[in-house]
Length: 179
Image (cartoon, rainbow, N blue to C red; front, side, top):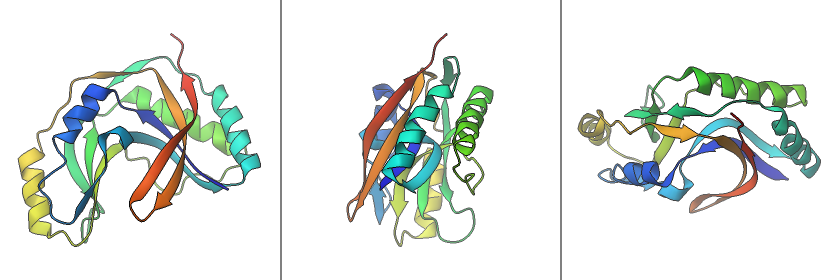
């Protein structure tokens, strides 16, 4: 069994910018910058046969390069105790088109559609018993975060292994775009 997801990798300068946001919240388990990514589609646990099919059908996704920009910070869930702190993505038509193409080829290959709405973000931390007032203060302090634009030249299929210290991600296949 493999636990898979499809993501856009972040260039090192963007990871460094995000690393500066990773402090100031008690009970936060910060994501190491080299593990940060923009998830296009979480697939979940699949058999090795299905993993092979996924690897192949993702070659059908066509896109040209485009640019993204990170903007603002927030948290999930929108109501109740915050459990995840994230950096947002400035709205991008090419990103939505890419995500829809990934979803389409995966569904055509027999995978169930993803159950939740696509909300593009970069997870910065997972929270445990962090006081809501501290989260509000963090958001107020970092709410105007804005990165420089960065190029997106492809996407990656990852496998993920969970442990008590968090998930470790492993590259399964890289898919480049052609202009």
